[in-house]
Length: 250
View 1: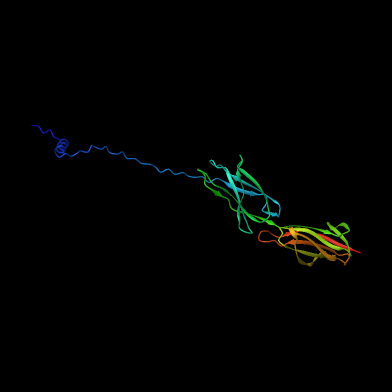
View 2: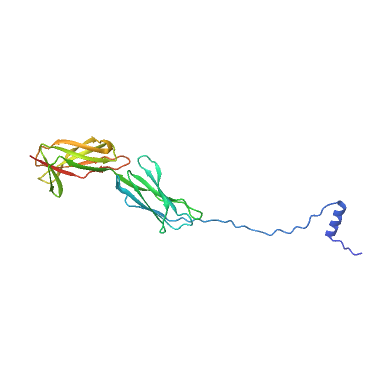
């Protein structure tokens, strides 16, 4: 009698006797590997340029933000921080044009730091430009009142007063910081130098306006020049009027 049983048939027979279930043969699982997917974001070019970084109160700041190629987002936002209070606000926002430029204008009243932000998209990093300080100085206008004649002296406009007339300075200092000063110099005809005649502070009226009556100049023949100065604050640099030239006669 031939031995026809194999290990598999013996096991199957034994399972039948003992009521055991035989697990079906399992195919070996194929080896699989899954590579991690890493998205590398680009950092687009973002720059700012300004018409000036030194302005006077009330002048208009012109700015341009340039954004290089990006996947989908073409919007930029311009921020500003007031030096006087530290307050930060959105000054402008919008999409760049076909050349990648976004331009804006802003009426300036105080010194601020400016920067631009691109918020990024699925393929591009967020970018923030370096802050740029735009300094804003005070603005002072002044004129003379009470003179009777206008002429030219050493290339300057010279106002002539009668020695019996009051000399009046009218003008405005902005922003209205409450105070300004008047500085007087007298010309030395012998050596051509200007001699300091002192500085006097005064209070500004509503809206920074002023009207100063400095009295009479009885010293006929001398030439004076006067300038009005706004001393400035944390938010603004000092401001100066033009020099005003005057003399008096009988």
